Amino acid sequence: MNLKIKILSCITAFLVLWTASVFAQEARAIMQKVLDRNDGTTEVSRQKLSTCRFVKKNKRLVCAESPRVKVFDSVRKDYGPNQKDTKSITIIQKPVSEKGIGFLQYDYEKQGKDSDQWMYLSAMRKIKRIVSGNDDEPKSGSFFGSEISYEDLETRHLEDYQYRILKSVIYRKRPCWVIESLPTPKRTRKSNYSKSIQWVDKERDLVLKTLLFDRQGKPVKQIVIGQVENIKGIWVARKIHVTNVQTKRRTTMSLESVMFNVEVPDSFLTQRSLSSDTFREKHLSRLNKSLK
Image (cartoon, rainbow, N blue to C red; front, side, top):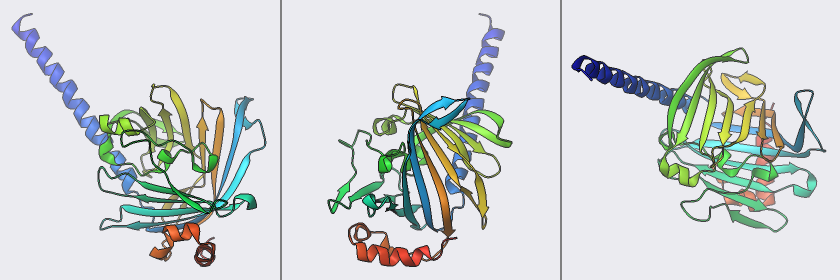
């Protein structure tokens, strides 16, 4: 190889690495904007969760059985100097046989600090902390028997992933970036997913679609945002479809009513609201009056 070819090869290699680095930085900046998107400092909502085994009929996914439906109230509040720590609680209201079953979650901005999660089983009057087998294993189990896992509910840390822009597309008439997220080696040990691909709305900083791959690299879930609505300057997903292509089950989460930036007492976002019916219902009754 003569000197000229060597120089050209070095320049080409440098440009490839430089371009990849620039795209990675740009992809990271895009995902930072997604995390920083305005979603209010508090949120009170009523939602419906519908899960069923599906089949494909006339190119559409339809339930092959009567769906299992749950209606729940959810309350969230942001904390911390940057309003990046979050506490949230979810309480099932219907069916009556499951009324009072609850889920409490604390998310933290601090890198390396995992989310804390607790489940309350009303029939047993018992609070159970949700943990993995050890610090280097992912959590197992699902949210209220749906196709949404406990990991799916956790707030992502930007530093836990490496990002890459795959392409720019028009998806459902919206200009989107398609971004690949690969977990770092440390995060890989704690995650059920080896990779995710996300369609990010360029103008609204909203993830419209996500493909998730299992630890063997096979497609496992597709999460698609349905109707999107702007409520007082906040973009809100009215429906979220979570399709598990391996179990052939699908969960649809529908937002029935919501209100942002209402006063939420700190005492409500505690384990007391899980275990004390009187305390919980007293606060929920007041908070639900704000719903529209």
